[in-house]
Amino acid sequence: MKTNIEIINDMIKHFEKLDIVKSEDIPDISLYMDQMTSFIDEKLTSFKKEEDDKLLTKTMINNYTKNKLLPPSDKKKYTKNHVMLLILIYFYKNVLSFADIKSLCDLSVYDSFKKEDGSLSRLYDILVSMESDKKDAIISDLKDRLESAKKKSKDFNSESVELFTFLSDIVLEVYFKQHLIEYILNKL
Image (tube, rainbow, N blue to C red; front, side):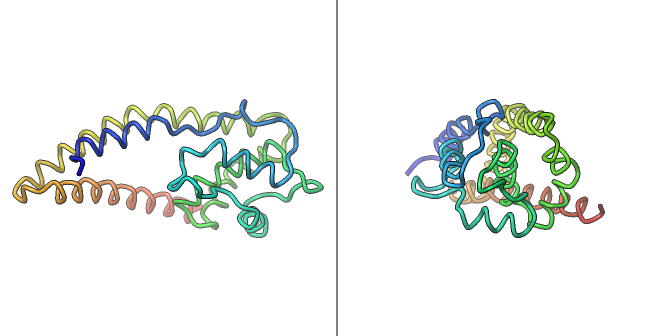
């Protein structure tokens, strides 16, 4: 069995490979649904938990459209703006409810979506740049958290307890940050 340090180092290597697709790498041509799901699945493959997982399905897209998270396609074709919005929804849905995603996107994404001036691409690229800015800080934070977990669980003399403490620390932070996001969105 791997030690916690080996597990964390593997996690960091995996984390460093995670990249959100840049707007410049999204085709400027309209795509049919199958093309779009294949494109997103290929570009975000490093985010899959299992190799044969589907990140986006036709049912999901129809559900997003039905719930007004995603504007309808134009004659069964999806634009670059649709692709960018679907990528954002993919990340948001793991943290937020549909209502909260809609509230968040109402702040600026939907207005930018309607414009054909590239404003959604610029907004999307801001979000992508934030991802790369955060990676070093997150890696450093994870290492600090592991050290903290070691200290807090030292009386147990158990790597399992240490790993439990480390992961619980992260879960608590995610929970509180998610709660804060929901609180702000509910006040809008």
